[in-house]
Structure formats: C-alpha cells, structure tokens
Length: 484
Image 1 (tube, rainbow, N blue to C red):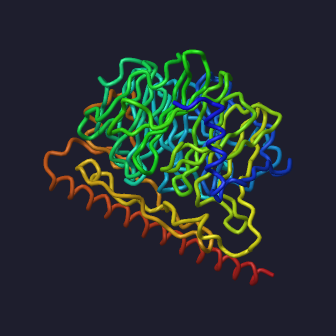
Image 2: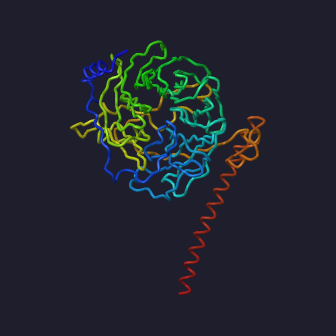
Image 3: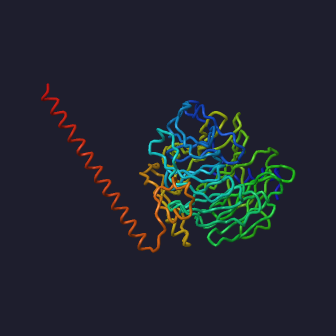
C-alpha cells in the first residue's frame, strides 16, 4: 500500500512520459449549457445523466411519477418548462442508460420496480412519451441500476434493491437470467467487462464480486475491498483488471486496482482525501484514463492506468466552483477529433447541465492517431440469442479518422413470447405484439410469416391511400381552375 504523499510523488515522476499529462479541461460558454432544468433530488448515487452522439438525457424532478428529459445535443440554452419529457414511470426514475447499438433507444429503472425501454424519435421529442416499447417486470423492489451489454444486441442488465440482478432479452421482453442469491445486501453498482462475458459488482456488504452471469457463479470475490461503510464502486478495465473506489475505516476516499485471478492483495491502493461524496468512475478503454467525479465535489480528477508501478498515475484535476449533482460521459463516437477532444462530461448543477470538454493540446491540425485508436462502434457483435447460448465477441471497432457520422438506426422491435399466459390481465395493455403460447417452432415461424404478410398488406393499402390522396388533390386543382 502506498501512502498518499509517496503515491503522488512516484506518480508525477513516472507520468512525465505520458502524452496525457497536459490534458486540459474547460467548461463551455453559458449559451452552450442546457438551462432551467430541475435536476432530480432523489437520494440515489447514480449519475442522473446519460449521453450519446445524438442526445443528452437527464433525470428530473416530476410530480406524481418519474420523468427524464431527452434533448438533442444542439438544443442548448433555456429549456422551456413545457418541453416534452419521457414520463411513463409511476415512481421516481433512478437510473438511465443509452443503448450502445442504437442511439435512439434508452432504458430506465425506477422506484416503481420496473425497467422500461424507450424509442426516441430521430429528431427528439415533440410530445411527451408515456408508452415505452417494452416494460420489464421482475424486480420486487426499486430498480436502481440499468446497464446494456457492450457487444450483444438487446441484452440489458438491471439490479434492484431486492439484491437481485436480472438479465433481459429486450427483443422478446423475457428475463433470461436471474441472479437473486448472490448478494446479501444492497448492490451499489454493476459493470460489464469488455466483451460482456463477466460482470463485477460492489455491494453494501463491502464485497467486490466477479460473476459469470451465464454460468450463474461467482468467479472471484474480495471481502472488505474498502473497509469504510460508505458506498463503493467497481468497474472492469479493458485488460480484465477491476478498478474500485471506496472509503477507508477513517472515512478517507480510496481507489484501488485488483487482479480478479488473485484478489488477496490489491495491485495498487491510494488514499485521496476525506470528502464524503461517492466517487463515480468513468473509464476510457482507448486511452486507459479513469476520470473520478465525486457527487457533491466541484472537481474531476483523472488518472492513467499502466502496467508499470505504481499502476495508477495521477494526471491532473479539473476544478470549478459549483458542486456536481450528477455527471454524463460522452462515448468516443461523439467527440470532436479535430479539436483533440478526448473526453466530454455533462455536469449537472441544481438547475442546469454544463458540458466540460477535455482536450490534449497539439500544434498540428492533422488527425492524431495516437490519441484515437480504433474505438467501439455502434454495430452489435452478437445477437442476444447467441450471447445467451454462450458465445462471446469483442466490440466491433471503427476508425474516427474522418469523425463519426451517425447512421440510420433501426427501430427496436419487441416480439413477446408466452406473455399472455404469464401476465395478469391488468397488464395486458403494455404488450406491444403479444402472441398466444407457442406450441411448436413451426407455429412460431408461421405466425411470423403471417405477421409479415399483414404488415406488407397494411403498407400497400397505405401506399394506395397516399396515391388516391394525390390524385384527389390534382383533380380538385383542375376543378378549381375550371371554376375560375
């Protein structure tokens, strides 16, 4: 274990070689902030904000239920009180997460014990959205964590205060894995590894666990990873190691690095300070930088992880005056490579959201390929069924050399299975496409073929109506001319 002073001295000495030692953080000008937003006051340690290359989503105060805003990135300035929201939950929203494979799909977990998955129109909301694409019901207490699988399409994880983790196939609305006997106390956070074959969790029982969800077994665990009573966080790094934040017995904030193959002793453990806000880690696998944002802090500290001692190297701190209520973190695809931007945060204040841009100053205007190795793109490497059957795949990488141009997203379609039999009648209204119990696979195939046929027929009737409308309007114009 390295003491704070010694750690910082060694860190500085080693980090001289790093190209990230001059990373420079700057908040945008006032007119580029999102203003007059009533950020949620719910007492929950999630980030309250999720961002992708199209939208920023923010959990807000809502009377009589739970809601979040979804704003196109360019919709800066004052946000009108009447701006439409996503408001289908009956209790406060606790966590939101954008789908990594579809920039118009977002999941939300709520105090109403449900997870909802929403499809946002391409250009943002013009009316409030109350009907999700699918409602996922299976938790018996509030759902505080939602996290999409990094490489498999339509696979979503949720964790609730019932101490259960459920992994859903969103494409069918089914809960396919239920890990309900692994945690004896509240789950603080869950993180997928790079290819989504494992998850790691931090829990109120002070344990960090590495779990194989498909085998439903604990692969590694560490008791008292941090000895303090306040909340911990654990995330997977690209090399398979686990990074944790937590508190010492003396309530000092700590960060640590662990190898799941040997959790006896940490690879590194550093004390930071005695503030009491939970440290939310944001990790960039391309640059191996971890940004730590404390809830209630007014700073973002960043560290580089390397395989040389002391392994966790302090880089710098971005400081501001105002404390942060939450924080959104943009994926690499949404950054401006021409400005050498390596990270963008969306800092939540009480009444606004303020983007903070992290850049590496470079003299040249050319594309800096050492700052931008190929990064995870929006294409899923696996279908949900393949992953549930046991396949693994790394993310499909894309080059950012010419910037990222968002493609067309396909709509999320949910074809539910067996749902009429398993749901009480009162909930039938939330089934989008419900099918009676399938007896054999052939019936299922026939039904799908029949469904395609009906959809084609509807489309052809709609086309006919459009053509007739055009014909009518032409005839009316001719009539009007003759009348003149």
